[in-house]
Length: 388
Image 1: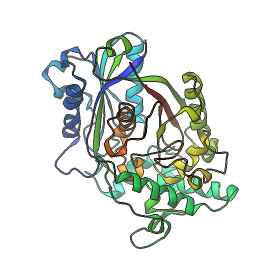
Image 2: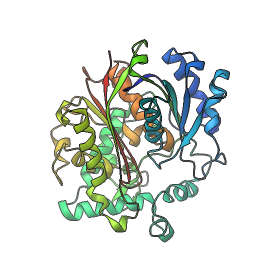
Image 3: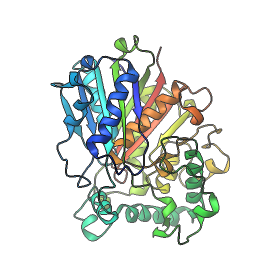
């Protein structure tokens, strides 16, 4: 039994001082149910993608989703965590239940409240999603981890600081058209490529503009089995989905090879029975600009070491042969951890139903999502298509 997205609600990403985690969940849950046009009592179960890890004191938050409607009381509610892929993990858990016949309609929410603590605490919480014994405990942060990956890449293929700046500039330019984006400003290549007081070096060679944003935000999806989805006003089908996990310690692997993402992309495309050139757009996990560059190569858009060429020829621009991160990506849109994967699926559903507004690409037929937890550890790839 296949699974379809039949409704969604996407909140703005940024700093929301007036909303706690419960408020963020509430801000999208009911709206997604309304958008799907389904009575709340027909929803069989709910899932919440949320990392937390110390951002807020609410460790037991799965039932926040039930606040969306009194009819959701007594429904199964589960919180799912898989680092920065917590949102996709929640989506896939709901898909598993639907495919197994244990649910017909599901509500999935991704939410994160990151700004209730200071910057140092945010860094500490995120660092604990690494292999703590060898990485976080020795002072490594995620900018440091991805900075190391960038240095490894540069040592093999040459200095690509300018390439990273071009990715940042592209995504900020795209983010101007995204009403949900945290930063809607075209920063330009020169600013992104220059170390300055406003764009300091964070972890050599990564500058501030090479790093995603600390964000609050929430997104919700309503999922249904294919048979049920035929009665809805809109439906976007999962043509395929793949999850590939790698070892956690970086000492046991070469993270800059992106082998986990490469395998996830290959598996998803194979199961979908399509080729990369069949895709109309992709939303990929640019937690750092080096991650997007490595993703070009992992997905097969460019050979190893040649990812810069798809920027040279415009392939990944909104008008290119495979637009990547037309939403602005995590770079401009923001990266509320638990919401990220749900957001990617919602944005692709908008595109495939012609409801992406100023972000809309021309005549999309297949869209891909790549959401990653850790340094290429938990890797999720979905291929989506219009249904009906």
